[in-house]
Length: 248
Image 1: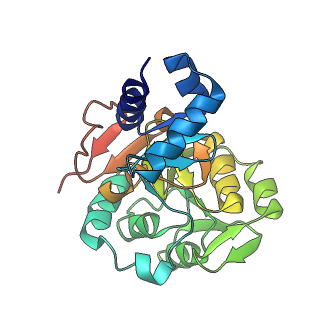
Image 2 (image 1 turned 45 degrees about the vertical axis):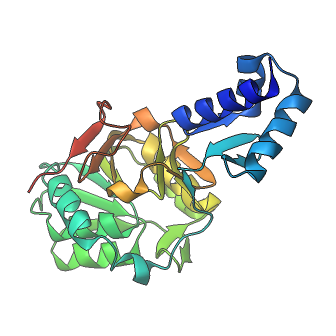
């Protein structure tokens, strides 16, 4: 196969999938590891793809390495977050055992909660305070406070969450991608999300459309493992059965 044809096929595959591993490209093109590595360097230098550890990403995929400060995120996409939160809050029923993840979109859910005959657990101090002031029964897990996201994280948090079995839960995410799933920049926070996630029956990701085709370093769940509540269709995801569009 000519080099130009091979490079063209790499670009097409990476753009179609959003990303590709080096091993996938080796098998797809029946090429050697050294050839693929050289091709990725060439395409990265020309700006056709983004070379990452173990493979490549589409230039249309954003990569977020760290969390923005929560004060900044609270004033971003407010209308979209409120629409998503209003829909999510209606899903909570009497006698539910509810997990609400730290985050700004999940925080807005609390503003619309009407079900007081449910028990709430959260790893966010502000969430717990708001729920308590509303007269809800709420439990705040213990651990270390991460100031950037106001999330409680660490081994103590994981130990507590391992004992719970939630009927319904809501999580925020930094990135949503068909291949890499739901991702976040921080390893400890990803661990808390994952533990609460696997111990929950009905799982909802609440995220505005800006989070799609974005990838952060640490994954906490696969794309098909939760229902996504967002505010509008995103190109390339219209056929996904696990996406709900919040309506006014």
